[in-house]
Image 1: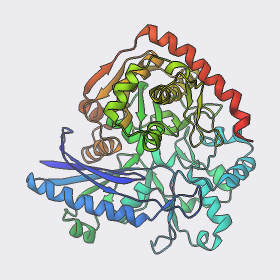
Image 2 (image 1 turned 45 degrees about the vertical axis):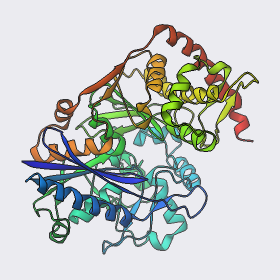
Image 3 (image 1 turned 90 degrees about the vertical axis):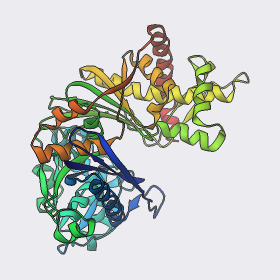
Image 4 (image 1 turned 135 degrees about the vertical axis):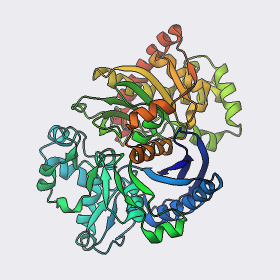
Amino acid sequence: MDLYVGLDVGTTGVKGILVDETGKILSIATERLSMITPQPAWAEQEPFSWWEAVRKILKKLSLKAKEHSSKIRAISTSGQMHSLVLIDKNGEILRNAILWCDQRTHKECEEATEKLGGEGSVLNLVGNPILPGFTLPKLLWIRNHEPEIFEKIEKIMLPKDFINYMLTGEVKTEHSDASGTVMYDVSKMEWNDEVLKELNISRDLLPEIIPSNGVVGRLKPDVARDLELEEDTLVIAGGADNACAALGIAVVEPGDVMVSLGTSGTVLAPTLGEKPDPKGRVHFFSHTVPGMRYHMGVMLSAAFSLEWFKEKFLSEDYETINEEVEKVPIGSNGIVFLPYLNGERTPHRDPFARGVFFGISSYNTKWDMVRAIFEGVAFGIKDSFDVLKELDVKITNVRITGGGSKSKVWNKMLADMISMKIQKPVVDEGASYGAAILAVSGATSENPSKISKNWFKIKSSTEPTIENTKVYERLHQKFVKLYSSLKNVFRM
């Protein structure tokens, strides 16, 4: 029996899962990662820390495969988007990777946007505005501030592509990760030569783009020996983390929507459309499914808002927190919470926004405040749904994933706010499960969408209550107006 590995190179850790061809998980292995913060708002990691974590995981999973009297046929990797890895002509890493959450590149974003004719022009060229988290402004920052390093660059890579390079010696990427660089035209699904020319970036620096289920290569002999794997083990291109997470829960065609309620929150909706949001409120990226794209709303502090409050002010466990929150009436006894602890993307794109508790009175308890956090995060998710509806995105099935989805209270709030049933999957292993699907697809040539649908099973569903929806609609208007009233104050 052939087995397959799906890896996910995240910011705080790496996870690997071993599956059979039916999607049954046989083993899971994880390794923690740490972040380097050279200056406030900067974020870096040593790429070899990802590789060492992957090595440990693959050795464990190789041993597990042998226990099943099987071999690993293919490996595929998902990873954090946007983060920049640089290698020289000898294949050596030139510096630490600058991560997706790094905020040092505001000046480069402004200069590049102006040089390309303004934000409207940028949206037409690449489908997304140039934001500090994306790859392009990081590369421009290197050129401006570390020219001696820039001159030595042979290739740039994304984190999961670096892992594939270490496994095979080949430098390649695929569409879902390329689309997060803002050097890639999402509509045409190729590198954008006009952007590269205007910003004086050589196309030779960029890797070849292959399909997400395309074969990057086979294991290098020394790597195969080190990992105790066969040299003919295939390495499949893989995909960006959110795209792989969506693939893992069969959000693969128009009408499907994924809500990821993790540290950050995302709302991902596949589309056959070729045009981005003209206002740039939601991202527009390529999916791991051939020919498919998706719109994605992003809020920066979703479940993190609750984690922050719990760490600072609560001693109760999450089970108690959910029980107490459920006792508080809708509307949190008058308190509204803006979940913008570290700024916000969708729909405001406002790095200056901050968290706010509004409407506190002497009547309120701490549980009113905690319920307000739950509601504020759910309102932030609803904001993304409202943008999608404005863009005429079809919404039929809503599926939820991430740590926050363990809360029945949060699931119910979201179902009520968007007035739609929310499905929870049996397997909720995030991007690593989608990467495993791509490993199977690449090895067997079966369509990843078909595999995804065959593997997906519903664990439970949460139905909306119409009466609650009406109340939340009124409260959401208050939530929206509160931000509008404070927008200019945040910048003072």
